[in-house]
Length: 389
Ligand code: GLA
Picture 1: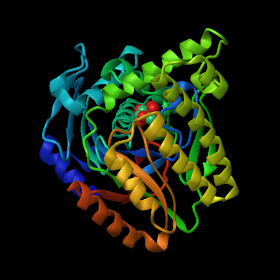
Picture 2: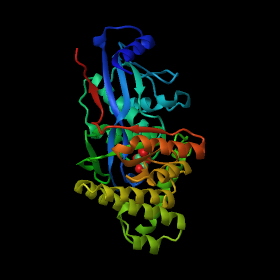
Picture 3: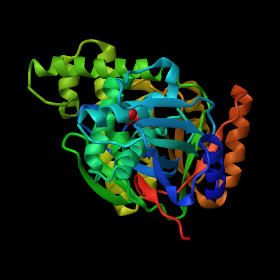
Picture 4: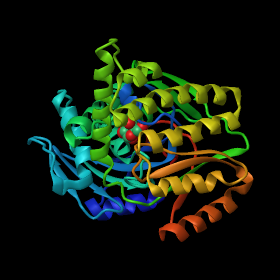
């Protein structure tokens, strides 16, 4: 949607005003190139912020209400910031912004009432961090409108807390960090243990990052995610009886093999330690410009996520296996939490069109579901948009 259509939609939802009263904000989604399910284990991850994201049109109100609506969802959510805010099933997606506003208020930040219209180009609930995107976007715009300087890292941490305590998903910091701290053209080599971040140029030369959406629901994602986290904590507990470590990523394969008897817990721990090594290797390959070796790391990571961590799905495996059979595809893997959602692949730019058709045909034939494909740029984190007059 262009600026004019957004203004029209805003005004038909909330009423007319002068154009000067409207402000625009954008937050990107994220793709994790490699390093899944290790952010909550003290590991290092490699996400990029992507040009698919959510735009918000915002206008100040004279009271302390916040109205939320979206260009493609029917529900409108109204929040009264003077009253207690509690998670409300009926509010659906509105719980994410509500949680952020609630937690910002709890830090004694003086917010002002606003009307917000969200417009998303990011597929919702597809593993590209739509929830972190709307959280960080809302926090950023609420603070900016109230003339409060935003500390991006603090905002990312607050949004993670919202997810953990308000929404109830025990996620790590990767998504909120990527949405808040992304840099154009760069991957974030983020140490989730101390939040040190090195920006690595994401130069893929003749190759393009292709995102493939299984378009399958991710119903199990939240509950299974929390189970995986518990399993990792169990593994950590077992190893801690022999050697005190803070995070599972610090464990050695020898310790895992020797100390953990339960085969499921052992497999989970193995994935965590492997995956952390793949990330370090992949980062070096990217810096050296060895995209083939980078692709090999992606492949290895997918296998570990599928077999040891068991967070892939038949549809994700099908997309990954199908595209891997194509010449000039250097690597492919699921990305994010899994259980459906999206996979990514590194594909030569000259064959993108044919590859999409080929994968679509195979995938549709096997599943009766049409997949979606996205190509996008690597962009900056959340920001206010300014347009030329
Ligand atoms: C979700 C979580 C992240 C991370 C990924 C898996 O996106 O929000 O914190 O754990 O899954 O890597």
